[in-house]
Image (tube, rainbow, N blue to C red; front, side, top):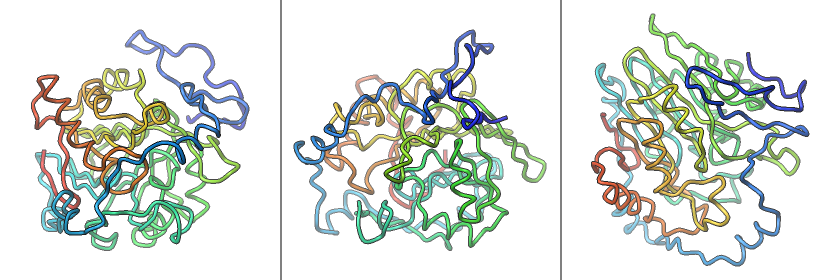
Length: 350
């Protein structure tokens, strides 16, 4: 059963020990809100970030340059309609949106197809790389997983369009509190989970375990709902293969626990961008060296880098996440194919 924050203001009761003989990382819920214990910044910190930090992003204004550095490929829709039975197949749509297919199931993560990640489409961060396809062009999707409620991960327009196309045949998984938001827009096939809670999804006699697991982040959509909803990452275990979606997160001890409890994973999607400046971002956004550590902690066989190359949210050079990822792999003596980036619209088999 999911935790019921409305009836509790103390968070988890007592230490929670499983067969790992370790206290599992649990949500901190008090005074009506969830808490990121490492995020101590105040409003003045936001002002310093917005107005005092140098912007090094250097995103080209010329589309021709972007097309070379961050090409948008036309998806191979034939592959998407007929995914391999013996492998995991993934397409990067952009930012944290990934279409993953394995063991006969198709999963979509944090879908955002809109031009801006904002309450309105006339203001806020605008994509500098478009989606490679439309929602209408996607293959049939079985499940959508949501990591948290920020506008670049929970996009109102994409939610409505997905629901319009698939209706209640599409299952949605979300952390506590986000399910009620989805139901407010007519999306009824929703399962809300807290960290370490599981649900079973069955398709054609195949059973998949969906587990909400920890992340270090925060939530907010309006001026009055900061951290009223929970955030998280997702572990999916199929009959033969498995997938881990880190969503959006700072580095925390939860990843090694996820790896011991649910790993190894056939494929992981791990954020590598939106990390500069570190004094402001480290409590809720990883940088590439942290991303590689997450890859190792969760015991991923392969990983793809997400949460970069689509929206300008922070100030690092726009191609730096990719170059720093490659540098970190080299410094650690890891195979360069173990953790890669792929192009928008690229369909990759693992």
